[in-house]
Length: 405
Image (cartoon, rainbow, N blue to C red; front, top):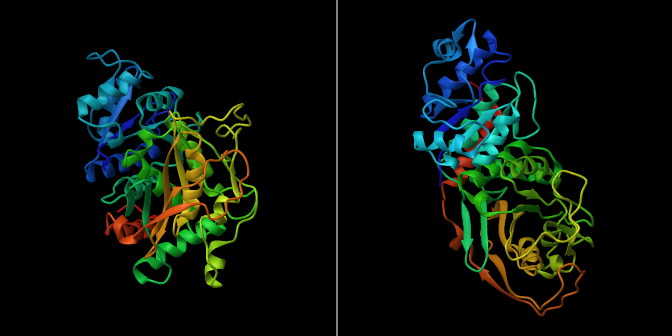
């Protein structure tokens, strides 16, 4: 687990625009830098040249307003130019930071490319205007401070994890009846099923957890698991996942998994006393051999999956793992590795790991009978951090009412 230690700031359209400062924005940026320092996070400036304002070095002008912190200027002390990866690497080595202990706040193409080349999460500062389409956009310095406080200052990441024949992670336990879990569980359900609640919180909480756990370093693609109706797509996570994957030269495959036939709705079936199994999912999904390539309108001519690739499979609420395991069975048939992930994991229900499925073509609809084998991994085995649940609730409440302290 990594914790945020440093923030790299660009200059152009982050601190100033056209070489001029805006007093109101400078005051807000000063609040941001003071906030970072108060949390033990070190801001630094990275620039390709020494800027001048009203005949004075910009560093001297801004230091009087923002406080003193390190400035790294290309060609001074051997600092490479942006957007070379060596530019951010120089800063990280000098400051003693890892990439996942750092975020980059910029606006220009050079800033964006420097962050991407360096493998650093890019925050797009839009308060002087938007110039690039990469990164998570922030309208004010206050919004950045909120993001840092809520999502980047974490003591707990995964509440639940399994690494026994399947690799699976979840943020927190799910129950709308147990008081300790009910507030955030209800909000997550509303967000995932109805687009209500606070979807932005859940998607950014998930993304920050992927980042600070360094899971993003191991994946090539992120794919959502579809809803239970034919043709459905889990689209709430689409925009933030598209942004996230572009930051790390990965690809979001929005329609890799196709629901070709409406499946029984799990919650309804259980409430009516019905019995569910893997077959409800295995017999209603199929892999798309020509999935959409990221956010564009182009499709792969051939399947992008093979033994050299890893897919991060994302679902909202996992009860027993039937959905994730069905998708894992299909994706694994391509040779690709699969890491499974859900926002929440239903309490007191084991994870039903699929162990054996007859050989099949994952790009064709299938009709399995009972010729499958599975193992129940008891719920208690996967609990890795009991305090993660209380932190999720605390962070959700902070997100809703956040303001400068």
